[in-house]
View 1 (tube, rainbow, N blue to C red):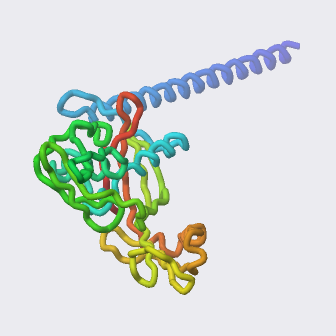
View 2: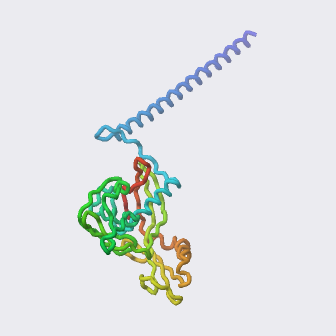
View 3: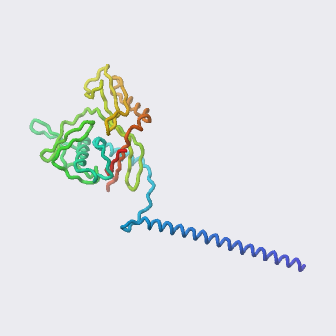
Length: 295
């Protein structure tokens, strides 16, 4: 009986020892985890301190770019469509409009005004003048800043790959009659988008479309025997990227060429330049151009 008591006591001691050892191990593991967490927090703090610039401002870690939402993309594309073709023909990239010369800014603004019908028809005696008044142009809506106009005329690309001369006279800019039958159109296709640090980047594959009849651009009358050809061309060097011929009876059925562009896009897209539009929003939530690159 006494032997049985001894065995019971020994068993209880062993169990108690196991409990003590287990408890100690658990405490050690928890302490180690806490130290690791503390070390991680210290590393984060140190990293942020290392990112602090000379002005004492802590830079937040760079945000992961996200795609532009469909509604904002639609608004951005609508704004880009108001920009003149001259922007593409300039072959000039800039990270800020401040990098442009004032003449370049004037060229873009006047081309923008012309394209968007921000001009007036003025009766001058027996003749009619077409004028753009600088005072009527809100350049901040385009570039996010106001520009200084000069009394110097400029050449701009409006609706074709031919320069149009806009001259300065008596405080306004004047130009010749606005052509109604344009045969050149802009071609754009969204390549990709991203939003980063409140800047909207819209990447477009772009070119311009020339329409000719029997190799001529002067389209007056179309005969059944005529050959109509559409050519998608590069802004930078006017080279042909893609071409398509239509029968005369289909000259107004442009969906044929649009189908051809859509169905053959993968075959010519790698030849096209990528145009990067950097847009920002003003206080009213409207887009304006802050940068432009040709890749």
